[in-house]
Image (cartoon, rainbow over all chains, first blue to last red):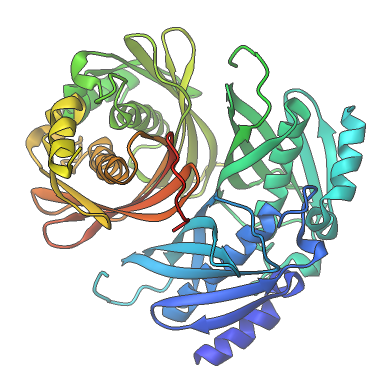
Length: 137
Length: 137
Length: 137
Length: 137
């Protein structure tokens, strides 16, 4: 499956992501970038982007990258550190794979607002179901 | 503010949670329980409850408990471990405060499906903005 | 292998733990408690118990509990939140298993000083190599 | 205080690190690298480098970098993912700061063996006590 097909499958297949308005911006072997326009429906009681929305954006960047690199990767764990509130109405999440070894992969995901401020830093651990003989990164 | 008023404020004030259909089921000094009916719009490309939705349910249980115990608590970090897929169309998240010391609190949140299976285990760290002189738990 | 034999194997087999002076205090199906007398050699540049020492105590409580419950469990991930400095010369770590499902287990570990103050809260994820047919906890 | 003085203070001041045989290899504004020769006393019951030892090496790389960049940073949280066992008798940990915003910083630390295999991936959150007016990274 090409990257473009992958994108299409994700956009149409993941209904929670689609409903949240998250879109794929870029996929390369080095990173995946996704973004979302922030609307009133994404805010919490303090009028900031809700933590679950920020996690969803980050998790989707991870999922896009991992499934582009080695299809059928399931998320085992995610951690999210909230750094500062987003001050713009668009946020992006960029996923980088930091290690891939056997069935395991670890990605770092950085969420930024349109002003370049880092909003969250995340780490995701994935389990790669179909391991192919590959050198460790 | 009474617990009931708190619930109402959260339900109406947090638009992302409201749109996701998450509801408060129980708040006591020991725990907060929230739940959500799972619909097609909450599913990912594999027809499982999307990871961001599960995180949002857990994060909301944490937020409800912390704001009931000590208002104005902001989330600093969250971790989520995915254990198994939810096999029912309703999930609950129960938050327990494990430690409260000075400005810091740590909660554990367990997400279960209606069959009692543990779907995720989470841990959240909060920063309590208005510290009152309280003994450490 | 009995619990007592397990303890002996761990005390003699894990040289890093033995050198750090960590001892097993209690093992039941519900929890494992380990402890360590804090000496000058366990301190950091600020004269507090070094973070790696606290992690080691917590990790060992997890390892003891998991190996008592289902032998051959390997640690996949650990998280540690530092709450306050230990103010006594003895610390304990108590591990509780929060979920066990298939090959996965998640434990919470609380580290306290002798005054009952919570020093750290940890979460460990283990992979159980030899799965036996067991109901999920 | 110069980097060299910092190194000397850490080596002599942190007794747990000194006893574990961990040494500072490199400190620049971009990264800190520390290393340790693995001996029998660092092994667990399975003859692998003990998890607490690996965490201590990673935590020290974080501490060295953070204290070089902005003195008096305390660790709030650490997470460690174990990827594969170290197969050589020397390990290094390299810390990179991923975000610095106000009082908060987040570092990623990669632990490798001498063969270049990634053994662990870690993330540390620090609280910077003495904030100076600095642009966010």
